[in-house]
Length: 175
Image (spheres, rainbow, N blue to C red):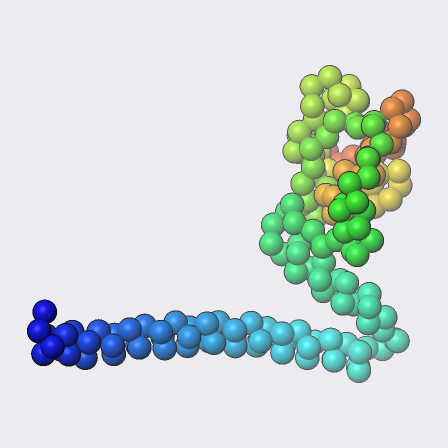
């Protein structure tokens, strides 16, 4: 290839490469600015709540609620874990051996996805689609799947009380 041909190829390819690099950088900057816009709105909401709410506000509780909402907004199985829960999950500590045999998801309350055949849950008559309104009188409305699964574990042979909604929410029953 002659030096004239190299110069032509270089003069054509250099601007194309430069435009590609600049375009990529601008795209990432614009995406970052969109994220910052959401954070600005979040900051404004927190400022409004702390400055104008009718009662004193526990900012830590508000922020935990915001983070929980971010994780809950992903899908039914995602959850925000507190620092203590993360330590517990990462520690690898053994869970109690007893398990009722339920697979759960979140849909307003904890919802039963499946009751394993032969499990205590199946023997108690729990079915796919049932909602767990409470576990041992603790409401599940604010409970993550992670928390619910742990609340359903215990020493083999111990009992757990579940408030179930099946069909009519006005008529829960205890199992």
